[in-house]
Image 1 (tube, rainbow, N blue to C red):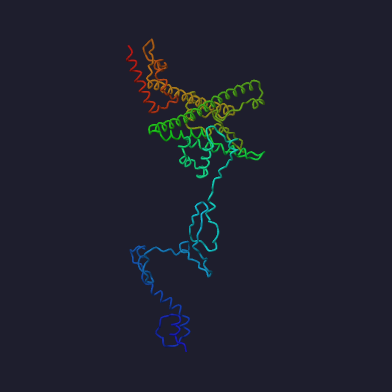
Image 2: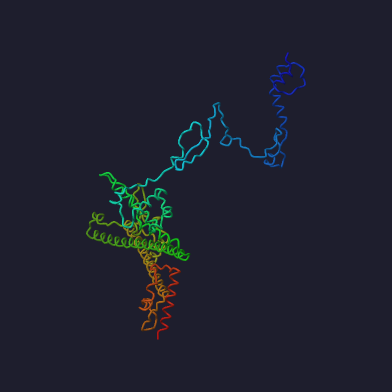
Length: 463
C-alpha cells in the first residue's frame, strides 16, 4: 500500500507530521496549496526603508544566489547564436600546391583548399588584367609611323617598357634609357605612344566604320602641370592676398546685385508713376466725352507696385461703403503714418463721408501719396549712394598721392580735379582703383607707398 511519504518523495515534497500514515484524498488535492504556501513563506525579506532600489538589487536575491559580477545578455541574437552541428560529414580540406598565372617564373605555392576544388584554377587569377599594347610590323612603321624626332629603336624601346609596366608612364619614364636615347619627358612619351595607337587604329579599322581613337594633348598636360607647380610654390603672402581678393570680389558681386535690384525697383516706380498719370488722363478724356463704356478698354494695365491696391468687395450680402476706404494689410506702418501726416498738413479729413465719388477719389489720393513717398525714398537713396561714391573717389585720390590743383579764386582745392600728368605716369602701372569702393589689397598698398615715395624723392632732386 502506498503511503504519503512515497507520494511526497515522488512529487519532491517535504515530509509532514503524518509521514507514516497512508496518503489521503486531502493530501493530493491540497498539495499545490501547501507548496505555494511554503514558497510564500520564504519571501519574507523586504527592502529596508531608505535603501535605494539599485543598492537593494546588488544584494542576494530570493533564491540566495550571488549577484552577477559581469553584465549578461540573455536576448536571442548574433551574440548568442549557437553552432548548428548536423549529422553530416565535414567536407575535407587538403594542403595542395597552386601556381599564380600572373607570375612567369613558375613559382609553386601551397595553401589549404577543399578536396573538391583540387585541380581547379587559382580563384584570384581573374583579377590578372593586362593591357593590350599594339604590335606593329616593319612595313607599317615605314608607311605610317615614321617620325623624324623618333628612331625605330627608340620607339621599340618605348613600346617594350609600356608592355612591361602596363602603361605606368611615371615608371616608364624612370626606367627609360636616357643615356642611349634622347632625354624625354613623360608628356613626350605619352604623346608618341598615343599617336602610334591612333594611327594603327585608323589603318586597321574596317572600312565603313568609325573607330574610337584616344587623343592625348601634350601641350595641355604641360600647361596643367606648370599651373600646379605655380600653385604649389606660392608663398604664404600670396595665398593671403588671393583669399583677400576673393573676399573683395564676393563683396563687389553682392553690391552689384543690390544695385541692380534697387535699379529695378526704381524703374518699376517710374513706370507705375507714368502709367498712373496716363490712366488719369484717359479717365479725364473719357469723362469729358461722356463715353463711360470705353473707360475700361482705354484703361492701361497698372502694375502691382503702383501705390496701393485696394481689394474689391464682390461678396454676396450687405457691406458698408466705408470698408472700401480701409487700407490693406500690405501697407506698412511707416507708409500709413506718412499718409496721415501729409493729409493732416493739407487739411484733409482722415475719415471723410464715404460717398461713391469721395471713396474713389480718396483712395486714388492715398495711392498717389504712397507712390510719391516711395519715389522720394528711392531718390534719397540714390543721392546717398552718389555722395558716398564721391567721398570714396576723393579718398582713393588722396591715397594715391594725387595733388589736386587749387582754384584761382579762393585757393580751395577742387575735389573733382584730376591728378597731374606726372603723377599718372609714375603710378599708372601700379595703381589699382576699385570703382565699387572696396579697400586695396595689402601688397598693392605697399607697392603704391613705395612708388609714391620714389616719385617724391625724384621731385625733391629736381632743381
